[in-house]
Amino acid sequence: MITPSEFTLQCAGPADAAAVIAVLDAARSRSVAGGYDLWPLGFTAERLALHAGRTYIAVDRGGAAIGTITVERDDPLWADRAAGVMAGYVHRVAVRDPGTGLGAWLLDWADQHVAGFGGDRLRLDCIAWAPPLRRYYERLGFRHVDDVPLPPLPGVPPPAGEPVALARYERLAA
Image (cartoon, rainbow, N blue to C red; front, side, top):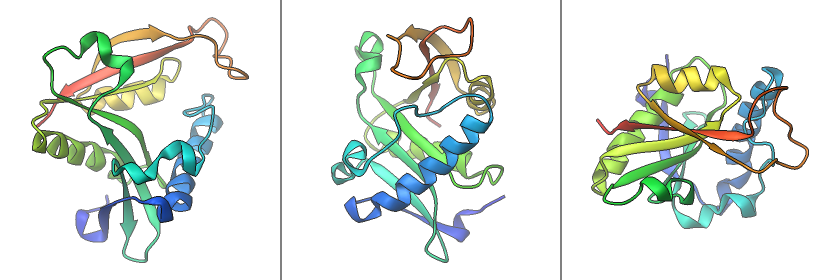
């Protein structure tokens, strides 16, 4: 398991776009090999909006990007549940190498980050037809809230019989 002494976490800027995209692409490739696509539309530097100061990158001692996470203060997908709640919304959490514990560490770090601006919970979503990812979040203490139907994504059909939906999860910040 990786420990915080083996990497640094820093705010990602435009100069980090290629490194963030490489981590996201590695995670996406694993998901496609597993039968689902985490991010069917892929990423560009423009789409990541790294100038906004909400994306973080974990870098190992050798300078290689090994993980990334974005934490927002709001998310339109959660507007129906936002009244009176201070939450952090996690997007694009990914690690270069699975099984290191870095993903769980990044989500725990996000708990503390959200608490720093007065938030009391983390919220995230994932495609509903990704059972391994859903089990992962549930093992980390996230509670399934509901599934939100989506319009069909161009060129991204879900597996036969699966709904086109996002599963919403939340957990109270530690």
